[in-house]
Length: 115
Image 1 (tube, rainbow, N blue to C red):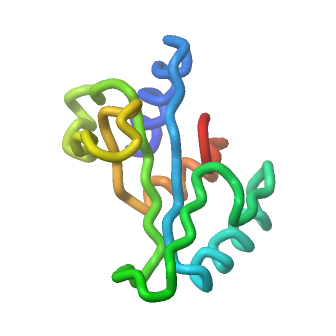
Image 2 (tube, one colour):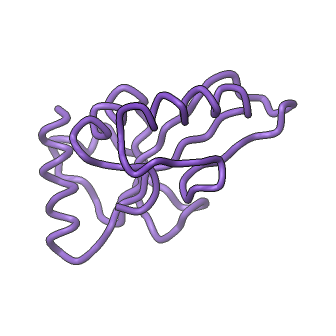
């Protein structure tokens, strides 16, 4: 599945567009994620990096959420993985919420922020 998503993301880049990956979590969880990310991926990120959203400690979130935003409709064979995105980051019409898949994208060269 991740290879098919990568094909889609490469098509987006070939068409002169970009995609965006963000991470959202409370401070302690985000620090753990950033440290883990920086041990295995480049470029290094900080809490001030584009794509990093640190929530207040009283936020109603309990874990890390990774999201992939794309500007065009995904192909039919992977469309079920994406939802419409109309409110937040409106330059990107579709969003995938799947920590496991997005971590696999990191392992294949994608990064936090604009790609």
